[in-house]
Length: 469
Ligand code: FAD
Image (cartoon, rainbow, N blue to C red; front, top):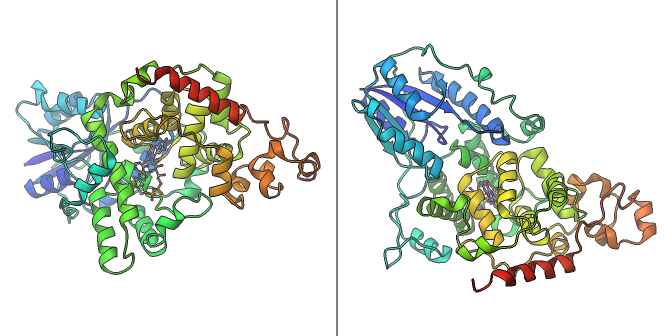
């Protein structure tokens, strides 16, 4: 059999069901179709690096990656005609755009003679498997997690040992350097100091976390100044790492006594699973709140507030540190992600979808499921979300989770010389303390763009407007 394998958010060789099956059935032509988004994003940088790494790995197996552009069902039908392929295999995805592409491919008339097959997505389990007693999709994480723990997670599939192909190089392939991915954004200069994308790097990152972080994860995961989380999200979002492989690697670390109680970490992997699961069952949630009353929420138009938030100039040091970390590194620590997101939707009353779009543009680990559900959780519009009336106080969060200010000092250097409590709320600092630290509020660092107490009261008023609708 001559099979085209369409790579998507599964840029790896291990645990790649479509690739493995194709390699066992005969010859393989690996293909990637470039994304067609309107504006470039930070995750394009990750994608470029992942494709580079995948190309190198495929070469080692005796294969090359064909890169093409266009609407997938059309591109793949032209390709299969020109190469006389017998089959097109791919792994499924759960987001609505990808699923539409899959349906177009599966139903394509021009591929009616070709064996088109969809394999399992990068999830722990098939999203149709878990259901409540009444046969509905789970809406509450606790029950979902309980049910997930009772399942047997399939073992990851080994990478093929070699790949034979009936074509050396497809003439229409786009050289990766000319894909437009590398030059698409102009703020990625520091990304390479922080990240090495790709499958091999994902294994290294995991090994490092397994040996140094997994055991203490639960106590360290909330403190942004410490390297206390796995930092695997970019690898999981791009599919450089398979979630099943990670799940079983954690279980193995448990058996070997490296981390006797890894549940807190597995629970986070289950939150990812729950996001994918919800996006699969409720595909319009990238745009629509899961709780319909939020359709009536009186969001504000506040372009100046939105810009201050994006640039990390809100006058709240933890919020500003997070937004600058995002810009510089393409990621934000989860605790701070929650604080900055809450600040946008509650302190500024700006629609969560505006925040989700900014994260889509700037996160290297952008993942449509995790991002959508993360924002709906924070906004209170998700099924099992933080209630809207629970409003994070950014100053209290800062004092609690960045107690000695190391994170703020790193990302908001103009405040670095401020001592202790003043660092968390410079606008409350005595004049002489500010002067000594070289801080001039309103000049070197902004005054708070909203007052916390007033903003909190305004948010609760806005919530009262939709309650009971
Ligand atoms: P770890 O703490 O080491 O967790 C391991 C893995 O579990 C992560 O890599 C991720 O795949 C998963 N995970 C952890 N926390 C969550 C969570 N709350 N929800 C879903 N999965 C989780 N994550 C993304 O991967 N992409 C996004 O675009 C994204 N956007 C978010 C937007 C908002 C508003 C919020 C509040 C959270 C968002 N998250 C997103 C979830 C979370 O912040 C990141 O997954 C996490 O910070 C990544 O760091 P880590 O790999 O070190 O996580």
